[in-house]
Length: 382
Image (tube, rainbow, N blue to C red; front, top):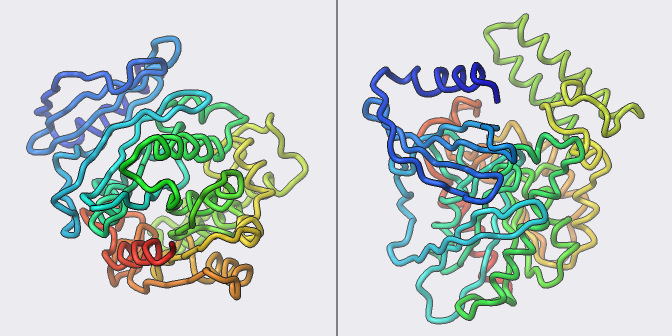
C-alpha cells in the first residue's frame, strides 16, 4: 500500500470525524507473518480501532478502521454468566483468531460454529458499528448453546484474497475443521452436537462444508443465497440503481455489472481473467467456483437437520430469488424447516422501512426471534 493510498484512507475515515485525534498504544494482534497491529484511536468523543496489516515484506498491506467494541452495547438477550476463550485456529495459509463462547451449563452444551457472509469478515461479523456474529454468539449462549466464531482467513491475510486462485472454500472449510478439533479435545463441550450456523455466503457454503466433514449434527442457514451469484449481483445493482438520486451514474453501474456477469457466464473466464472485469472485484478463482456451485443440490444430499431462516425485507437474498430455490429442492425432506421473519433485513435487523445499505449502519441488534428460532431448532434435534 503506497503512502498516498494509506494517507487517503486515513483522511477519509478518521480525519473526517474531527481534528482531535488521540492515538493509543499499539498492540500486536497477530505476531507471526502476515501480522496485524491494533491501534486504539479516540476522535472527539468516538472510540475507534485501527487494524494495520503487514505483509510478508513488512510493508503495510491494508488499513481497516472500525468503531471500537467499547462503543458497542450488548443486546438485551446477552447472558450474564458466559465465558469467552480466545483461540488460534490453524489453516494451510495462516492461523486465524477465534472466540469460543461457553454458557454456564450443568452438562456439556451443543456447539455452533458460525460462518460469516461473503467478504473479509472478522469473527464478530462487524457491519458498521454492529456485531452480528457477536449478537448470535451471545444469544445462543443465553439459550445454553456454545459457539465458535473466527476471523476469516481473507480478513487476517489481505494478500490471500488478492491471489487469483483464491476461493471462498478457503474461508470456510479449514477453519471449521480446526474448530471441530478444538471442540473434540475439550470436556466442557458436546462433540456429538456440533452445528454449522451460516449467514449469507456462509449459509450457502455450510452444506458444502458439512458434506466434506463427518460428525456435523445439523445446519442453520440464515439468509443463505442460492441463486447464481453473478445474477444476484446484477439484480442488486438494478435494485439500488432504482433508488439512486444519480440516475446516470446508477445506469453506468448497472451496465458495468451486466458486462462483468457476462464474463462469468462465458467461456472466457479463467484464472488469468483480470478481476476488474469481474463482478464485485472478486478473484477469478471465486467466480470459477461459484459459477458451478449448486448449494441446493449439495444440501439435498445431506441427511442432517436444516433450518432456513429468511428476512422478509432482505433485498440481497430474497424469498423470490433464493428461498424459493431452497424450498423447491428441500421441501418434503425430513428434518428440514423454513421460516420467514417479515420485518427483518439481510442481517436480521428488524424494522418497517424498506431496507437500504445505509440502514445497516445505525446501532442495532439481531432480531431476538431469529436467535430463538435458531436455538430452539438446535436444542430440539438430539
